[in-house]
Length: 122
Image 1 (cartoon, one colour):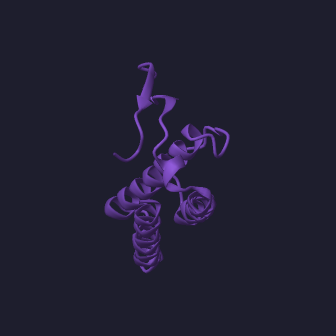
Image 2 (cartoon, helix red, strand yellow):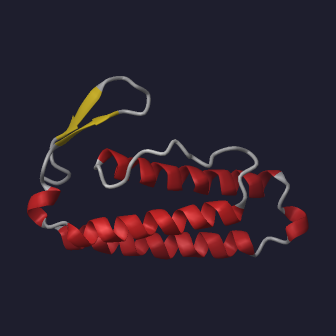
Image 3 (spheres, one colour):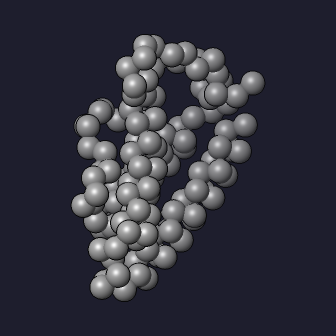
């Protein structure tokens, strides 16, 4: 089962690389405008969500840096993405099927209380 997660992660990394390449291809004079800003903010949101799960798993400490402001730049998001991807790669390389099936508690972002994920796979 862990190999399936590693395969999905590899696919996700490839997709993120294509997104970064696409955003980087936008002419500088067009970057201040709506669609480009929206795309960069959405990518920043994805990166933040991936990091939050690492925090919940206890892999990295929380830092409160979400990079979701309207002014976030692609270069900031790209650096953060590569950092988070390295952490995920390290984390997934250490997991096995037994560890993957473990339940864990985490605090939800909306502070609605503790939740339990009963094994990531059944």
